[in-house]
Structures are given as structure tokens and as C-alpha cells.
Length: 237
Image (cartoon, rainbow, N blue to C red; front, side):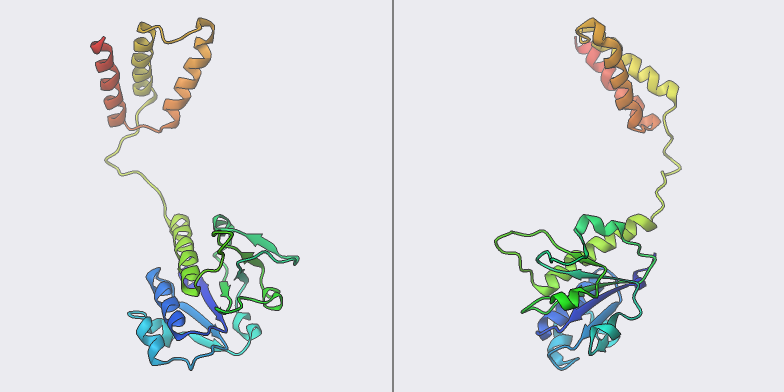
């Protein structure tokens, strides 16, 4: 999955400062693609470049269109951000559901203008609407703030999907025998303090105890540490 598949689309942005801040947010999370639709300020201008700080390359390589149709024609999926749910036949998703999006495809996140957001007509071009949970009494977010929240979430999702998790070769998984010896030591100490009460429940309690330890995926070192802890607790009595 490539970050080059992701585009951030600003529909009729009104403030130069917000355009620059959005470019900066895009670069913060190593994305490349900024698309503008009919921006109100002259684009680019000095204020946009100044507020983009170190993201001037994002501004310079951005694309400008006069309408949504042209802006999204090369995308596979469009997700429109909105502070409110719409009475339209369109699927609503939240930030948690971003991870379900197929980022092998070309995906665009569409943001409305600062004053009015996106109209129902503009929303109709999207596959999904995305709402960021905020204070119900004060839902409106600054344009660049909305973008940076979403960019951070997407970045984490892509890192997780692209990363192959593996243990260090120096870490050795504990054998079943090592874990069972540790469990037996734990059980012995629990028996000594008459922990398993009532006695008829002991078998199920032991099952639960084994389930806990086996689910932990312990290393041999961690198993030795826990065995030492259980042995020390037994000596204290």
C-alpha cells in the first residue's frame, strides 16, 4: 500500500492560511497529493507558501480544478468529511472504520469550505461520508485540524497494514514444558494458601489460569522471571 494512492481534496477553500496549514499537515505524515477545487484566494500566493512552512513542495505540485467531476475522475473511492449526518443513501463511517477502506485503490478525502462545508450535491459524489466525533454542542472543526486528524489516522492504518511483525531472533518463545513448570509452581503456591475455594470449582479455575498464561505468548526469559516471582512469594510465607 502506497501513500501515493491518497489525495486530500479541498473544495472551495477560502483562506490562504488554511490552505498552507493543510499542505503542512499533509507533509507531516508523508503524503504527497493536495487537490484544490476552485479556491477563493489566488493560488499559490505568498501567504499560502508562508503558512505551509517546509511544505512548499506540496503546494507547488498540487493540482487545481474548477469542479468536482474533474478533480475526482482518477480516483476509485471518495470519502467526504462532514460535521453532520445527511439524509442520503450513502454509507457513514467513523474514524475507526477508516481501517476497512481498501487503500490499494486510489482514495480521496474531500473537505468542504470553511464557511459552509459540503452541500448535499457535493456529498453525492462520495462513496462514504466521514464524521469526526466532537463536542455535540460545538461540532465545527478548523479545516486544517480536520485534515491532520484524518491524515494521522490513515498514516497509522497504512503502517500497520504494511508492517510485517516478527520477534527479534534473540527472543526465544517459551516451550510448553517451561510454561507448564511455571504454572505448576503458581498452582502449588495457590494450593498452599487454600486459594481454590470451593474445591469443586478448582478444575475450571485451573483451566482459566492456563488460558491466561498460554494466551500471553511468553518468552523463555519472561517465564523464568514469573517462576522466580512465584517462588519468592512462596518463601515469604
